[in-house]
Length: 343
Image (cartoon, rainbow, N blue to C red; front, side, top):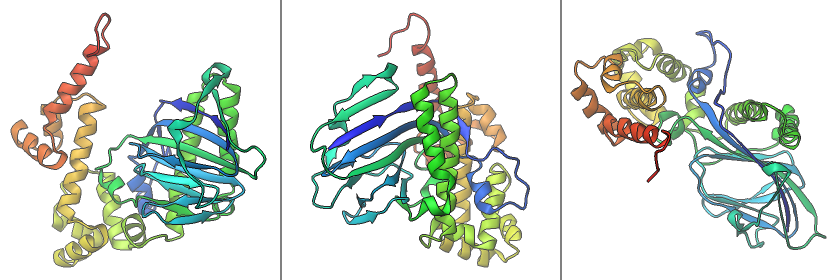
């Protein structure tokens, strides 16, 4: 096996959709509006048969695009699926998986590759095994989103999205990936921001292609294709702090309360009240950690009469009180002060 890795990590945040969104946009556009990429690990691999790689579970989305010659993907249920050139896979929550030249190849953990940094750390190499076999070229990325795995938006995603013939449906994808590779090789000023924005477009194209092809029957696809529920979700995500009672949401769908509540639960997989509560508390978590707002300010923003009532609701949804995130943020700030020592 012979592998060449070109990797770079960018930490400049970028939005998946930078344009202003009118009320009449597709529901999925509104749902994705709050999803941001905060970090990108990018890699290009050239491998000669026989080869196999195991990608362990990671707290970030993982993406692979087959550029030259096909390979095999070991899915979450240990089944092997053939990937042809132009195919792609996205694992939104970074589940463990494997890629190999054939199902009977012995996959090795990615960490076992011995990296030898060159070119100021931009280009890394890893080699070994048979160099006379057929060569497969893969592009891959690890993308860190600003939302944690319990956000309603990510919970609605499947563990694995497969996009067949992505290069045909989205002809710009190969060019975007090559542009990312060029940014790595040239190491020019602002390469991190360029990579993040290019990954932005790639991620949006992946999700759009998966939805448009109707892969699956639940979560995003069902919600995006259901006119009434899609309209409701778009309204909630457009204004997550709004006073979204069941009656108000039913009015958005132009349905009775009972008909709306039943339809929402069947499509989304949870009650409207639970979905709204999760989204609001995830928004509160962002205000606490990203914007560094005080707990009392966040409580007022969400319409709670007291900080204590907000804290109880927050802990019930998130699993920890808001004071936990404030304390963690304060500790992190203290560690960054001059002369401080991290524990």
